[in-house]
Length: 87
Image (cartoon, rainbow, N blue to C red):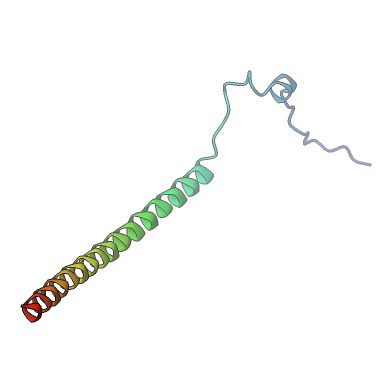
């Protein structure tokens, strides 16, 4: 049997057993970039949804206010008509 010249890298047992004391941790730049892109896409999607919702909400409020004004005007005409008939 031939001996393997490559060895498994030694680990830092102290850092592994006490992760709270390990202040020097490495961040994988690729995965952090992917995560930040994902967060950016989520933020953009929320902003687009909010813009659509705001437009729909404005239209809905306009329709409701118009309906209330028409109802009040109709009620006013009906009341004045009834008052004229009673005289």
